[in-house]
Length: 116
Image 1 (cartoon, rainbow, N blue to C red):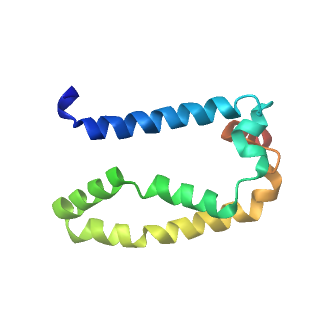
Image 2: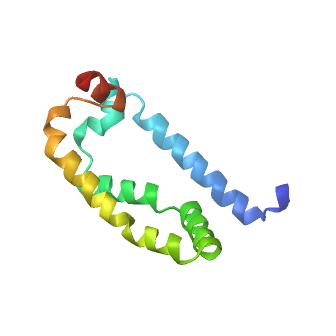
Image 3: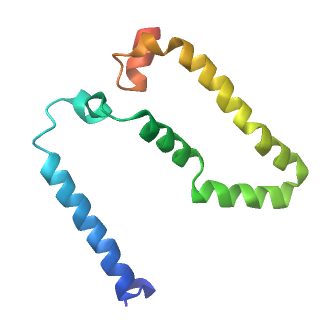
């Protein structure tokens, strides 16, 4: 056993790695520009983008860390967690009104260059 992992765990991780490598090598010749790579030729659905944002915010590490902070800091931290979605909506309102200005941008650097 490698690092106390069962052979089944190692085989699942290995198969996933091989699948990702296969997928990458099969798509490598189809991507010609940085824009195609960065924004997926603008064919990514809105649902996929929203779920990616939520998965980034609501991960296992963040969830366990927040539970620990609620336990150690108490009600104060719990209340701040409950009002954090409000900040998401405020941020969405700010960005949604100006999103058309940045249609040709593919990174934060492009946005900053356009603004400043």
